[in-house]
Amino acid sequence: MGEKEISQAVVARLPRYFRYLGELREQGVERISSGDLSVIMNVTASQIRQDFNHFGGFGQQGYGYNVDFLYHEIGRILGLDEEHQLVIIGAGNLGQALANYMNFEKRGFLVKGVFDVNPKLVGRQLRGLEIMHMDGLEHFIKMHKIDIAVLTVPKDSAIETAKLLVLCGVKAILNFAHVDLNVPEGVQVENVHLSDSLMKLSYNLHRYEEAFGKKTSGGGGKEG
Ligand code: NAI
Image (tube, rainbow, N blue to C red; front, side):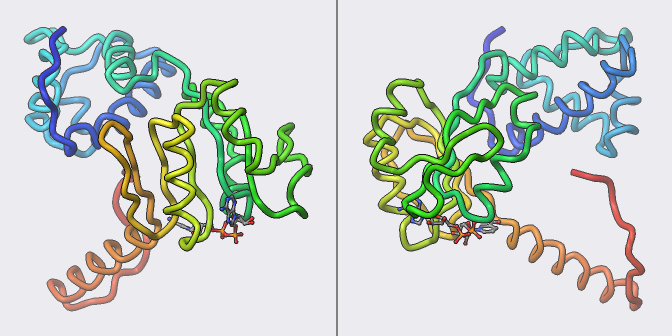
């Protein structure tokens, strides 16, 4: 199936389709129409059809989508049909929390190593992984064919650390530090900023209150 250049907005929606289809698959659902999927996912059927058309459509008119096929195709498009080897750089609060989050492995993201510069942390065990010193990073990345680094160091060290990661051959960085990384073409960076989501939430909260003249009482929309 030929895949044209796809907008990042469509790419950003694919993991959500993948998750929902995974759940349907676990429930034993074999086929689903775009209409039914749209109800479950709280998006329009036309949005779903448009998104899927970027990849050749996937479905058959009047027949619905084959859930298992669609799940695997979207997984393949997302590159989840092969395993990714990860390192976490910065074993502080966030780095340790991420290293302890088992669910990455379910999706084929294998945390192979955790690195830090703090001698008090080096040598400690973290879910079966020993925290290593940054001195051994380059060798480790080459030995274990690491393709993704999760960057959880303080803002001040993030740019230098990202440069080092690129020199070591890392091709993708999941950046949690609140700083923009300047990486060469061909290196992918995905920034994760929880505070951006909170600010977006705050904006929508205020906009809702202004529009309807009342305070919201909790609850809210579907999980994204
Ligand atoms: P922390 O201070 O607990 O941990 C940072 C760790 O990085 C420390 O263990 C430190 O020794 C290590 N480190 C410092 N320089 C290093 C280097 N050059 N190489 C390797 N390790 C190095 O900080 P915390 O709370 O875990 O936060 C980590 C980063 O994530 C910070 O930049 C923080 O601002 C950011 N953050 C981002 C969030 C987001 O939503 N994007 C949420 C929370 C934190």
